Amino acid sequence: MKINRLHVAVLVILVFLAGSFFVDAKQQTKAQLPTVGVLQFVSHPALDQIYKGIQTGLKESGYEDGKNMRIVFQNGQADQSKLTTMSQQLVQEKKADVLIGIATPAAQALANQTTKTPIVLGAITDPLSAGLVKSNEKPGGNITGVSDKSPVDAQFDLAVSLLPKSKTVGILYASSEENSKYQVAEAKKAAEAKKLSVKTYAVPSSNEIAQTVQVMAGEVDFIYIPTDNTIANAMQTVVNEADKAKTPIIPSVDTMVEQGGLATVGINQFELGVQTGKMTADILEGRSKPASTPIYTFKTGDIIINQKQAKQLGITIPEKIASKAKIVE
Image (cartoon, rainbow, N blue to C red; front, side):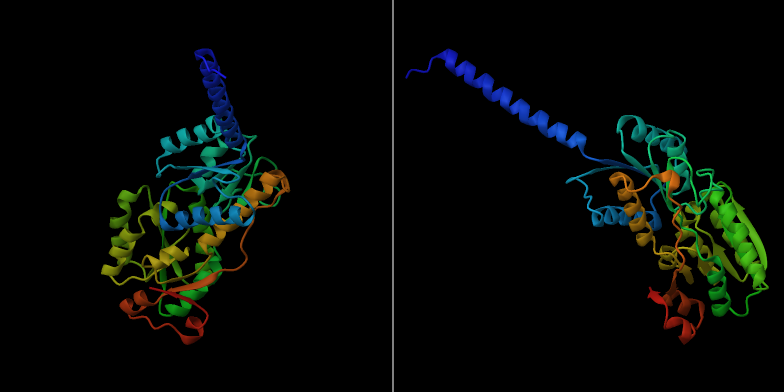
């Protein structure tokens, strides 16, 4: 049978249409995948660990990026205008099924853009005081999530055990972070219960941290740092200045001990992220709704000690504490 030009043309058209059909089908399938939009406030070890934990929590719940769901990740790098723009993109353009805000400023930026799309909080110390929920037990809106509230009383128990001669503690925090103000009040209460004098040092931005720590080193016996993103992002600066005066640092986060803090009783940031991922999966599955899902708060923490820092400061770790602690260098 002869194949003329007409036959060839028809064949080409059919192949083209078939290819277009498969491409469109592939694109449609991708578009139909559940989408999770993640907005992270800034890059530092604690928040980066939370994001890794979120991915693991989703995977353990049956959701894997690129296979049966999509993750759209944005990082505001501590720039409020970027957080606003990125949250708008995640809400309006990406059409995410669930949104995750890592740290309070990111969560607030997302909350300002939507009251309908579910939002899961990752590492917000007190969602109520941050204006994100009606109550931590019954959020009542489109927001729920995981708190990174630290066991403050246990942290000061540890501080007094390691630094028994201390009389004055200095609390370093950023005045721009709402959650930090709440934590300072909690820390002051816990410190005073241990008969410690308390001095608070608020910095408006990271530019003042070095000078503030220099002042603190001459006025306090040790420095306490709450879960504050501005300070965490400049932790190396804090450590460098405190080390010059051999002033110990008791931070609230495990990764900050690894960066040069002396010790803490802290929540594992990776596990915090895993819990955030699992809560997100429950919402995707329809097993839970933000309005009726209580904020998840960890009841216990791990003792984390930087042995190298302890030696550098001339501090001996009691065996009864060291035997129960996770030792980091």
